[in-house]
Image (cartoon, rainbow, N blue to C red; front, side):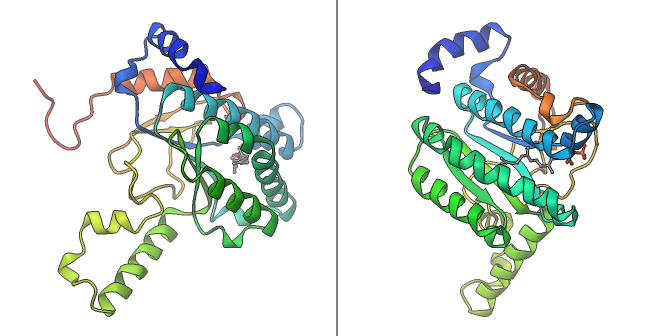
Length: 255
Ligand code: FPP
């Protein structure tokens, strides 16, 4: 079990210069560059996505071992439907296979699988596997693994505002009771802390419609490497960089 390595890992992580007491509670990742990774090697894009899943497996394990509370992975955006049908199919199959293959181990390691986004648009196979994974791991106290699927930040906010408007219309809420807390509680991430650290691989300096509300004060680390090349060592580097940042949340530096 991954968790049995926990104490040993803690020492190892500390010796790597990671302050285990000041870990980011919530890490969000934009896993970009699978296509370019494949192209560099003269391989089809699907091979890049396949290699991307292998990277993802290791990162989930490392976050679980570290004791990170929440890991959110941008696996499929509302805009990704614009890709060729075959590529969308490959991504959905990879997701379904990943869950089929990994669910037992994730469950044994107390991982709590959740989804962000409207997954009713996904192929039935994928929906079934997700429902099974979410239900089976529901009460697990370990790493919360949020899979963002058919997810878009604007769509998430629109959905939240519609729900709030309905509550106002039904007289359950007054317009003046709409505040940041209420909006947060209507997002897919309700009840979770906002990401402390956002990692984006493959160099692009944009948010690509990811967690637009939740990322307001998140520290961003953009790496040049493509997602399939991202590994636990690169994750520890990103965490080390995060730990060197001075987070002020709009205030002044503490003296
Ligand atoms: C970006 O690479 C990556 C994606 C659009 C999807 C990420 C998905 C996976 C890693 C695998 C499937 C997910 C799960 C949860 C098992 P890109 O294709 O945009 O790369 P490019 O910008 O180089 O073309």
